[in-house]
Image (cartoon, rainbow, N blue to C red; front, side, top):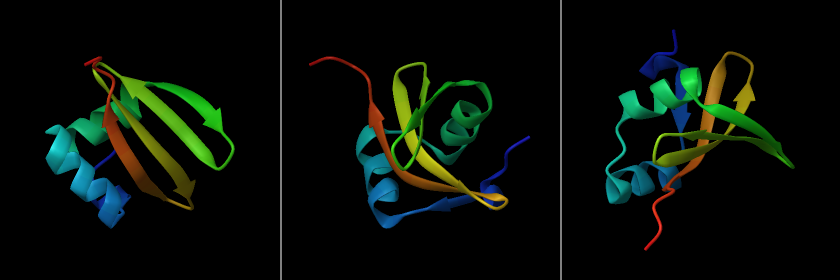
Length: 72
């Protein structure tokens, strides 16, 4: 189970979480249950209506950004 202590949320990601209305619990849930796609420098996780771009560094998940998948 991924917990808040397992996350390293960048300033950019924290700001985007506020803008998009995505909570820390939402991020944890996405990392556990979402579809994952390898990117050039990390992983993109898609879950429900939002995505998380992150990189696994040892036991931490460095959350680089979050964004809504909603159109319009």
